[in-house]
Length: 147
Image (cartoon, rainbow, N blue to C red; front, side, top):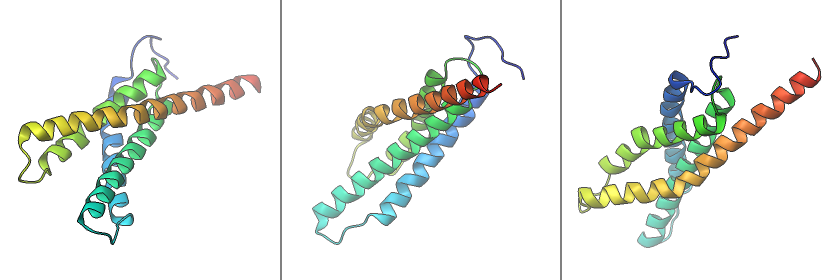
């Protein structure tokens, strides 16, 4: 199998994984929104919807970043998974968040909400990338040990 240079990134896999992690996060967020509904008042319903969308997006990006860092063939795996997760947020989730904003929210407020959400999901992306890279490293260590 072609290993490539040690310092180079697997850019095609990173781009594909970024779009895939964004799509996974979007699907998970919508599933959480459907599953975790509340029968309370309007404030409770709004907060429940916001938290379920945020948690769904964070879980989807975590899994996507973990899969990309696990499957990366060249380069630093944690950085590859983190960049893929951020690409997924930037090119899939942030535009959906901006486009689906309520009509009484301005474009500038939508951008600041998307930036704030990026700050909130970044630790989940980093965690997923680290776990995926660690599992891959542990698996390769076991493979070398029994070889």
